[in-house]
Length: 271
Image 1 (tube, one colour):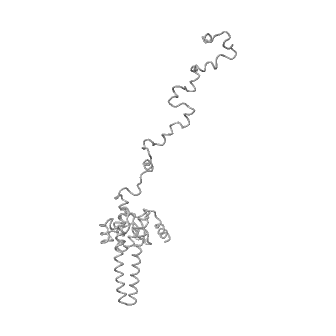
Image 2 (tube, rainbow, N blue to C red):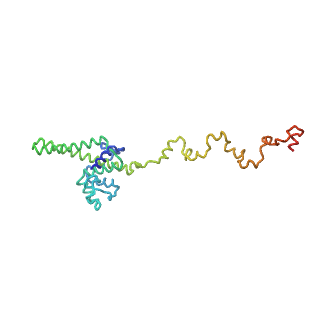
Image 3 (cartoon, rainbow, N blue to C red):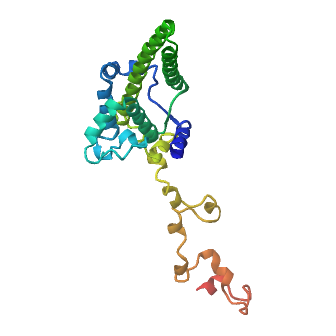
């Protein structure tokens, strides 16, 4: 029981909302709303089976939210147990389907829907209290008021249940992709980030491409990449080649050789 109360509190803080509220349920699917109003147990059977993805092996009486859940022989004849549930415990069958959808998609009920559901419950309780008072007092006026309240509460109850089942059906239509892509099927993060880039994805993607370029400070102390093979040999090949002409007078002739101008012209020395 404590777990059920904790789940009820968690449903109030779910981040998502129903695709349509109870006020607009009749506009979303008027045909199914009429069907659920005329044959409410049949609509509850169809919706519960659809909420289970048509896998009746997963069926549990009242969705596992009641003390009798799992103790009614659901594993042997789930279809028969579901039929018994929707006819004998119709209110619990609708509420169980609603709880299943809320827990699956993290749906919270809006304040307007809570007010409608609360008004339905309060009207039923008031009609019940008036009926008890009419039986105890025997007053015809109180008996007439009790009958009026009972009729009004039944109309509100049938209307709210019809709108609620239509709300469940529309939400499962959204789940099954009848309104477009499924709510959980979001595009990958890379595709979303590419759409925000000022340049096409072929220019700035993949990210490993800019790593092959030299750093920004390399051209200050090093020749450009396209000039390196032409004017600068590799370090291991430099001693094998002839030094440049401007470097020849710096290391030749030796230091103990007579300096130029001592009787030997520079042209004869080079020959």
